Image (tube, rainbow, N blue to C red; front, side, top):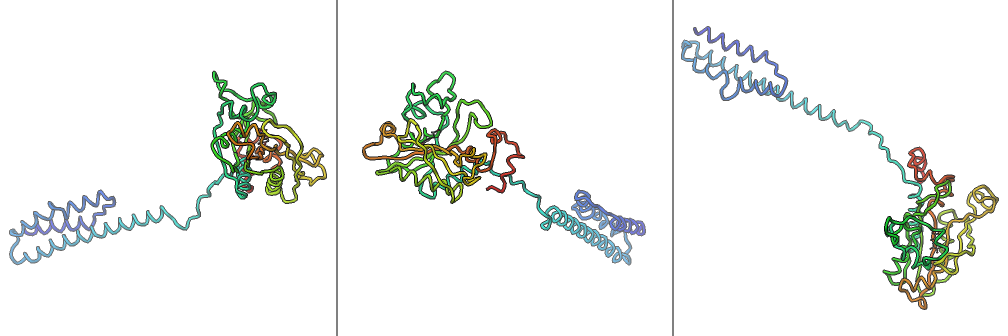
Length: 345
Ligand code: DAH
């Protein structure tokens, strides 16, 4: 009888020694079975009364050994799991592994030029103002001295909103000049970057949407000399310090006098090439002294204040600078084209 009980305990000991639970679940089962509140060893303590006195001590020691073995095994199993978790974690985040290359992309050539223009004028105290692309007739045309029957409207035909002939897509950012003059008192010294629209047949040289940066400076005693100096500073900053400018008399309804801005060809330096069409000069925009009518339309006293304005097409400058021969490339979002400007930043 006593030997039977000894055998039973010994077989439990052998089971414990042979057990190799590996999953967290199996380990927990092991713990419950041998060390839990209702563990398999408990009933054995009750058996002690069936053991003859001379073997009681031996039995007690055996049961303790079984318990200790189970505890040691559980401890070892838990340590092993903890170590495995640690290694898995360490492997998951290998600090020495080379990083995945990040594809940074690049700025759009129009944005590169736009930002450079903004930066160039910011340096001489011009602030930046932006406004809506859907404009009303007053801000795009009428306030700018271009009434409904003015022939200049033909050159800037645009898109009108359906059933609303008062609202149109702005043809130039000059509309923001008007809004600025209506809302601020001189001195005003701002530039106006933004997207504009024209009813144009799309070709290599023209598009129905493009970007402009215009500028406006209004104060007492602003003269044409100030205008010329500002344009010259800008041209040298953007196209290089050898650049010369030429102001060619022209007409804009909102400036008087008005001029086209030409720069000396930065490609051939005046020798003649196909960019300047062998004239040594390249046109980059228009400018002039703000017409007193425009000042009055916007609530500015034209007896007291004078000002100059200028405007240029951003795509045109980008095309000249980067030798792009088709404006459509700028709007097609072809990654092979856009990636070429990575180093231009
Ligand atoms: N708004 C003109 C255009 O879109 C460009 C321009 C010319 C703007 C002369 C000006 C300016 O402010 O003074 O063609």
